[in-house]
Length: 595
Image (cartoon, rainbow, N blue to C red):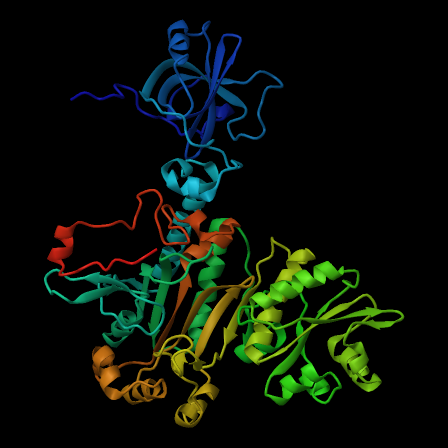
């Protein structure tokens, strides 16, 4: 059998050699990062996933190998044998781990040639993301992307080691399962052997992990692939990965304690950072009141203030009418921003409009008094109360949104984050964790005209709110909790319903008939009626967590082969059309849709 490598076998990677290897014979293999010809001596930066080593082809050292090196070009795959030497005085490269040494080549094998790459294999390359994704196999050679994926591997290793040490069992759950559309859209898979029938790809292993608890596996975990057919953005993919946990005979404190320990261990193992525990906690109601969002960034202040009670009888009819109709008026004090121009204020108004705010009122606080189109509508007493409530001082710029609470909170909550970025108030090296608890059990969907579960319909309500399930579902609080890091949700979970009768009550409150919930969840109800223990769990967005550990801005940079925002793989051109024969086997017909 012919072996292109012959007797050449790699002895070291391209980031391993140092002064301690001087005068040693080594064999390196990798890709040519760059080739430089300096007056007859050829220098090659040889790269593998670990780093770069400089290889020297000197005619005085080995004339035949030097002659062969003239054929080398960028991204050629080569193997070299050579002698490690210290670089001359003053010629060390402090930017390389191997910057004190170089390897003088005595043998060269060109293992494969390469065409001109579509872009430079460098971290700072200026190329569109679509081009990078089309040539992802090339993009994955960039040091920063390789570093991210290695960190992802180490993160998974750390999580597994931590959970294994606490007695968790890694159990796989099905990828082909039943469609139970209570959240995002399912991805459907047609069944050939059951014509007209479909599987669904799991949005999470939620029901299976509950069944595992009912089966007696006290502690389950899985680093699992999940699928959701939803509109995408930088931190969403149609297929993504979760760290999924479930435990029996536990309450919120038990789950939060284990989760905090996992995060603390992960950050220490992977980035060397010490995370302080226990994490801060806020109820959903307090988070919304103070920050407008259920995933607030705590690295800066700029807290919101509800001033509805002060302005409800004011002469400013816009504010008074909103409060009269059941809405709220909230304020955000941009401290020291009195010099914002009218254009800057208009830009912020347009930003708030993205979140459905109908307007953005403002007041500039100056020594000579308030400067604002709305200042004249308030009495001195109202001004005094507003100043005290909001903490208004000379130099401040205060913004107001008057609307239904959801819109007012959403607009000002995002405006708060936007202004903090604009003012550079955020310490990018800080990690602030927060538990948000006691979410509403349900929310009302105006489109479908029915209640929907805020998390999922298997979340347990607070026991003291059981009586509200029938009379006031929107007032029911749940035993759900989210873990937030720097304004991003990285995990979420709940104590589950473990009693059949309570689960049926929740289904009913969500507007599901017995026929409907039995058709979708008869297997779960049967299991709950067979002796289900109290149980609960949490799932972490693994891609997002790794992205934040890497300091990235998109989860696409921590996934080997990601999709675009249109759920397309530019590398393989998926999704694609299929043959008529395959469709016939599946008893499917494609409907032509006009572009």
